[in-house]
Length: 80
Image (cartoon, rainbow, N blue to C red; front, side, top):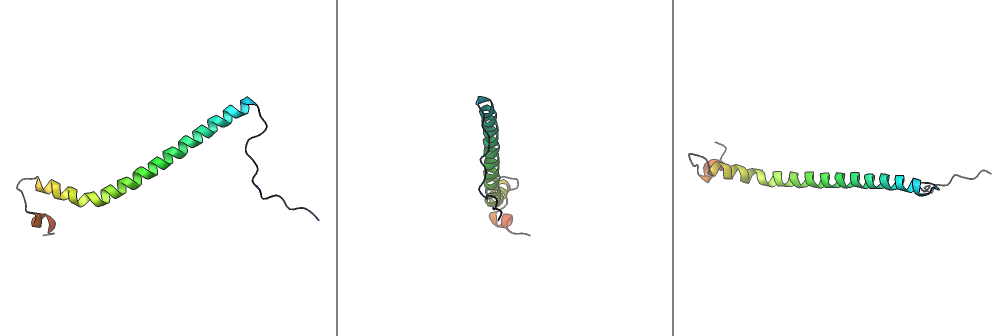
């Protein structure tokens, strides 16, 4: 009977001296940097979305209140 192949993941890297480890360290460092950039980009975009969502109407009201002629708050909020 044939044996089944192992489903365990094989360790990355190989038997290497300092030559292989420095290349692996550089790849690991660059992979970590890429991962951090992606995480920060995602966090920034989510935060920007929330700020834009909750800040748009107040921004319009503030800009409208500082314009000439000064409208009342009812005129700013009414669609007509």
